Length: 305
Image (tube, rainbow, N blue to C red):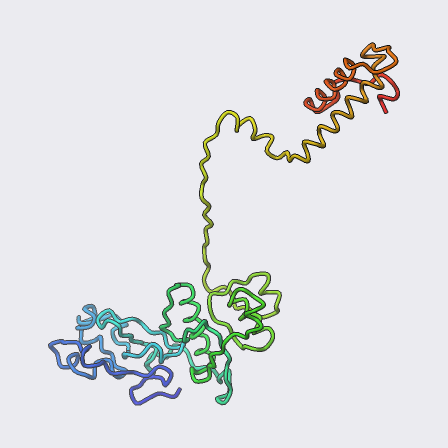
């Protein structure tokens, strides 16, 4: 494994603290500009970690570590935010004595090749910050994956979305997926939802990185109901056209009752249908409609038909 003079891996070099961040301790080891600048078991002095100052310190106190720039370290070298030095990072994995994972056999791309990436104008770094937490996680994850695959920042070509995809889709994220599918881009990094439309393009999605819970809220409309509105509510689904159809059917059925049943049920033996018989037929027809069934059993053959 190739290492630097400081004892750190080349993919996560040690750095010296700037003068304004130097720690002030009494002993000479912790009170100099070299603190954390090379791989060394700095915790053994006991000043940085009180548990390491005794006669039988924990095993972790003997581990080598150094300060690093988080953006300079690959995913193989996890970094930790320092509590003693605000805004500073350090790493045990950066030091060769703490061999945790070997570098891959070879890089994903040749040095002369580039990767066309769209990340919504966000530079892919280990410390990328976006107002939306999930997008921040996605960009940091993308940076970590590319580092793990041996893709350097110099090989990333940040590319704009094509006008054709933007005009065809209202969402920039959907347009990006389409550009990958047609070969205009190599990679889209961000908070992408695998919607049916995007999946239909044929572009490949990564596995789920982080789930999002969304809640839909709708205003509760409070309407004061009167007695008349309560009576009308069951009739709201009925349109004027439907009311007209019902009235026509009732009238037709009433006339049919008066024509075919007037002699047997209504005892109307006159040659012409009387108004009383028509009224009785209309009443029976309306009563049948309200009851949901026949209120009068036809007796004549014509009425039964």
